[in-house]
Image (cartoon, rainbow, N blue to C red):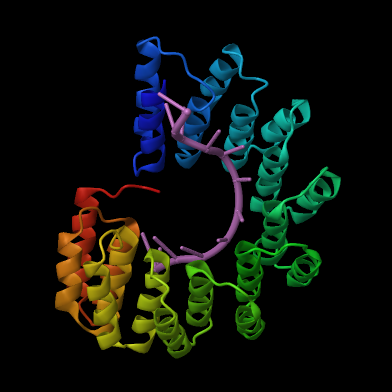
Length: 331
RNA sequence: GCUCUUGCGAAU
């Protein structure tokens, strides 16, 4: 089962998680018994593909094979139902389980938080026998970013005993979500440790609040401090460049992404197309667009809007027809 | 034995 698990895990995290399910099916055809590593991977694949309806039968076979008492499998199931919005099913599993651990509580809390129900999450938080940093951060994020109640989020944040980076990040992002870039910055300056997520949150915050110059300054400081950029951070920087019309800085980050393998993906390339369009370098935008292996509906949109901005209505329409002809993967 | 489920940031 070990080899099968690894293949399933690989596919579950890949861009085509359906292959995880196909592998799972082949595993069963070969009469290989699943173990308690297998199901969490399969369930993860089921939850990232919302269209897929295999979850129910996976649930059934997990029970049939005697995993009803296995916390990894049960927690995987709770998480699966939460992710597809079936909170009642998740709750039923949770209530019926005799082996609730921290992960079970945290998973269900996340389910409520994701649907904006911070008060139900709070009930769980108050009722749970012990809490870890995850529990606190889930609820801070639930009150702050997800429900827009930054005051409650801050109360929790101040109460929290051993603050880790993620909870600081959540709190900062709560302020950013409420458009409060000042308090966000203050907290950012106060925090003892920052990771690339912290920087990204604030960079995106400045961009969203219309301060692209501050975003770029922050990015410069980040590089000076030796933090490596990732895709999410890069997208913030690219957005700042397109807001500013800063073609030179945009080109710089583009070449940086090319030099570092693994940083160019569909999202960053789309952001680059958008940036080059808005900065007026239509050739470069076109070049990236043509070379992209997969174009999402957003890629097509930014290209058409970009052409429109520069008065190429006919070309935009032509692009629209191309898109219709080729078909776009829905997400 | 190796594989371990839950929390924070992205493009129109």
